[in-house]
Length: 415
Image (cartoon, one colour):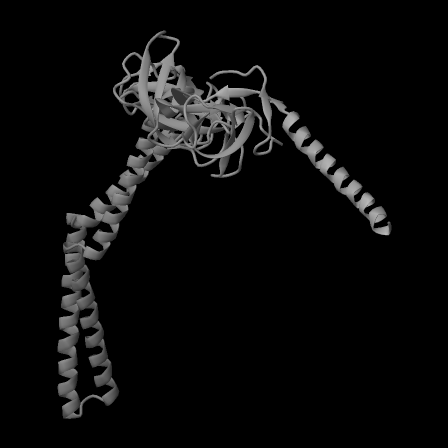
């Protein structure tokens, strides 16, 4: 009897567990989750970025003030086409012209000194030096004869030692004066090479100063280095500019490029070599083709909207861009992926981090988790390379969904 009482509660417990388990199974099978689905289809896919750009010359020249001066006149404005050598602006060159005159005067003085040093002495100066030499030679000859007579008398005991020494000293002094006169005459008859060399260097230095001063005056008339278009005029008439201050920028017309500003959100995946299409409102319906050649390594401020951060991208044309004008604002379409047919699903069907991506495929009334390999994606769709077949239905926004969970499809959308 005691054993029977024990069995009844145990049997009741087992029954309760079985009922709960059966209820759980019935509840899992019966609590189908309503999901939105889409069908994987092979469709034409492309990934492109739209940006605004500007047609600019590949080569640009900044014309700057060569010296501190006031802008007298500007001969051009932005957008003007200019031939080579055209005068673009004129600066006040009064101070520069003053320095030219000073340099020319210094050159004249240096040339006169060189000419004087290189020419022989005047005839009257040579005659005077010659006469002085003759007189000195006569005195030296007389002093020498007197010294010889005094020596003879001294040997005879007729004069003293002091008188002999005085006569010989006088003869030596007279001889020295005659030699000095001869040297002076010789110097007047020839030039000093060392002095000539110094004066020649001084003349050359003065000539360089004149050339530089004249060049500075000439630089006061700014001219176009080559045929081009005025891209920017930074100065105004009447402005006083310091050396190196920008006056204007002139771009060459032989080669054009497009510089586009892309937002930080759009720059991902943009790289040199990608194809692009350029369109201009000035010629509706026409498209120019090009490619990305350079992506700026840093973020910059937008030229049109200073508060917006952008990344500059340069594009070159595949052929000469006939009909496009430098400075034109254009629409640029850069293709990350050129149009091609691939298997696509909406972006919200794909979950996972990094390279591990999965989708939930509806098989009958059950959601099955399936790993997939993805390719490119744009703002709407993702390319599925492996793991899915055309026509299969995928669950959109499958967060919280479990593998094998019953589902019922709501009104889905087809791609």
